[in-house]
Length: 274
Length: 304
Image (cartoon, rainbow over all chains, first blue to last red; front, side):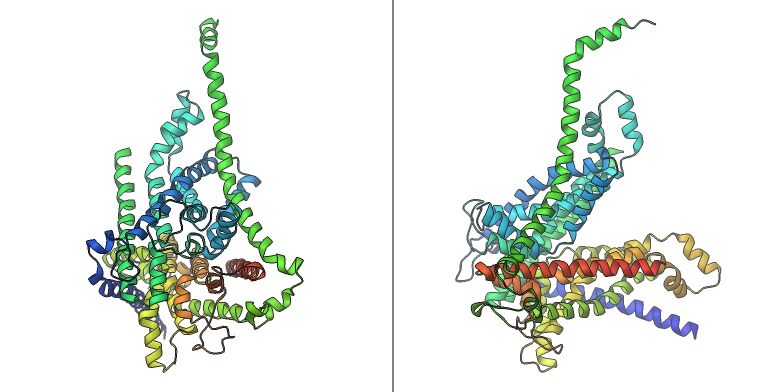
């Protein structure tokens, strides 16, 4: 009886793993199979044409803009916040409140961020449906990611580094800039790269704050669509699965490159450091 | 023990020391300020959404009860009832958990305990990568494969249905659940397994009676994360839900969950209509808070 139950459970474990891997392979395989015919130089670097047959360059540019702007703001704030939490703060109610807020921000669904962005950045601050509104909303979305990964990186710096540096008569700030931050750089960098992935994958919040204009943005104050929003809209409006799958390939390749470079950077820098 | 040289040194650098201390205190204040920004953001988000969303009930005499339990959503006729969407959201979430959690957990257990090392080394990072794929693509896949499949094999007039949403959400939460649960199962100390095996327990018995209970908090976290992804998902769901404003009574009904209601109408809504979308946001928000709370309670009780 016991061996029967064991075998049944073992069979279920194998079965589940096959289902998971099978489905995920099916999804990626389907997207590549359906979209690869559209992929060429003209598709990626060509201007969009509403009548069809055009490229996705405006959406690539919009995506790059949103990544750049939100990271330029979120990275320094996130790193300094993590430095405060790990290196400066005395554990107490204040730190607890900050941690609670950061964790809560992680749990809020992106459509709520979109609602907030639409009323705060778009309407109240009068930035309109624009790349800048979307980027500011995304800044808040990735802030907890940057804070958490930086904190983890700071935790790995051995206490002896701090003590050694302080014993040489440096100030806390000098120790931080010259010793602690450089040795936690790999962790911080991979955190930033992972945030890029998060921004690329985001759709609902951008949909409500950047709008859906399918044209090359003239400035960061114009409304535009990112790759993900474009993939959504061509599917919803035109049912163009092939085009959506081709955009999907671009997105998946981007995510792959980002993930590999995150792993690579953290390995490479770790070696250089020790 | 005289110390004139030191004093001299101090006098010579008094100015730069002062600057150094000022820099120290300034920088620590700057760091604090940055850390407080996340608190400020949370307050702003909650404040703005709740302020806008509660306005119609406080200032304009709309009944909150009718909002929650009303079955008609006709903004043009001033009717705002979100009961069908609440039911749709609950069904879709529970359904996807019923499918996604067991498969995800079993896959995680397989990868960390049963799978040959070489196999796990390929599959684990691959699954992890899939957690980063934009969720819209899961929706595109659902519309292209699952919706026609349901249409053809179940003979539905419209494949976009509660069932399609459940399947796609379950698939979408798999990578998250597998990755987080696998990490926590791997973190269980080897001595637990050795102790149990030494007492004569079988390998499978050890896994389910010793290792999995020991990893319970991580597994709960995995489920909470997967759940959050399912309830909050918007754009993928729009593609496959069908967006009908009815209280779903079967798996084949076309549905409109809370999230999609906001995304579909925010573009053109104004006045009370827009405020009601914020109220929908509040309900969604509370929904997530309650579910997280309940799950935390369940795992705490399990620990006792």
